[in-house]
Image (cartoon, rainbow, N blue to C red; front, side, top):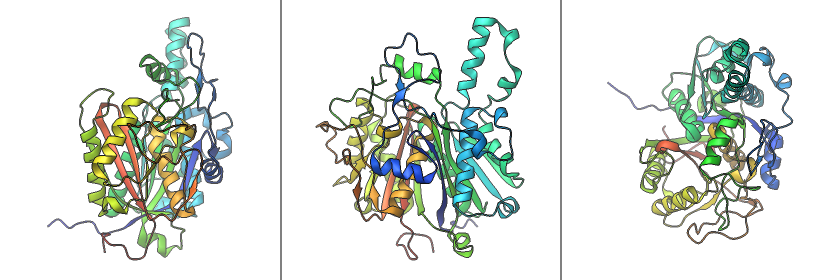
Amino acid sequence: MYEEPTRRVVITGLGSVSGIGIGKAEFLAGLRSGKSAAKPITAFDTEGFEHTTACEITDFDPAHWIENLDPGTLGRASQFSVAAARMAVADGGLDEDRLRAAPSLVSIGTTDGEARDLDQLVETEVRQGPEHMDPALARRVPAGRLSAAVAREFGLRRVEAVTLPTACAAGNYAIGYGFDAIRSGDVEYALCGGADALCRKTFTGFYRLGTIAPEKCRPFDVDRKGILTGEGAGVLLMESLESALARGARIYAEVLGYGLNCDAHHPVAPHQDSVAHCMRLALENAGIEPGEVDFISAHGTGTKANDVTEAGAIRQVFEVPPRTVSIKSMIGHTMGAASALAAVGCALALTEGFIPPTINHERTDPEVALDCVPNHAVEAELRVVQNNGLAFGGNNAVVIFGRWEPERTGAPA
């Protein structure tokens, strides 16, 4: 007979690689101060593009973070995921022998995998011929390496390593996967999040759609011009509440529940009713009423199609919409890492008692009509936060996080 899972799931370690800071402390400082990662692109040749700004990471040294693997055998996105996982394990104070001995999960979401390496291979083939393509570079391309590399870095043997390619909602998908695995007792520890590297392919795709902003990402602003692409990784160390308490771990937040749906309504445009339905699924799964949510970390790309649709969906679910922010205004759209880095931000917000700002904001679009915490972080006592992830093809994923409390209404016993 099937029994409902009963274990509560908590976050005990945070790892972040972003344009506003590498590591928890820098990322937190960047969120609090409203730092912008926007700068001229150096990752690829931008000749022929009218707009050449992105949120590129220019101070990342993989050798500093990766201990057991040769960074040269990994693509940039895999380097990001391994580094963020290392940070999360260290931050959580989890002994690596203990991690290796327990059944575990590595779930990493992505949009592009190692498309940056694929860009280089294609360019070499076109300009010099296939005989000049680097086999070592080709071996770095498979997207499955984003999670497999994490397992190899820690020498994990009792592990499931899965890479989830659900585009810009993939980080939340990966967190939901880990939530189920821990709650059901399948694994003891889960390293969950998302990673992507800046690449010409994706920049060009958004550019051809007319959605690349000239200089700034301005979500919810009446004069917004579109997205800035970004890169990075966010990884959460997740475990059962029982495990965390037994080893005296610091608990950043509890994962209360999540919702997923895929409407396939349109290749790129979000569908308002479907987004609203996904939020309701997440709230129901978490045992949370809409009025209990203190703020929403929105998908908030800075395009009219997203901002107006997402705001409309929020108003369908929330009689009084909570404060709704977009950290993409600071770190850009990091694709598969987007909702994972936002999840790190949500955990820090719950722990530190603040709501990060939506920067570059001058005047809220009347069609949006939300309090987007413009330009400056605000101090706040937070109990429940919602993290939205929306993706092309109608892939939606929403995760609900809560401040850890010994007794919580709606939580499993």
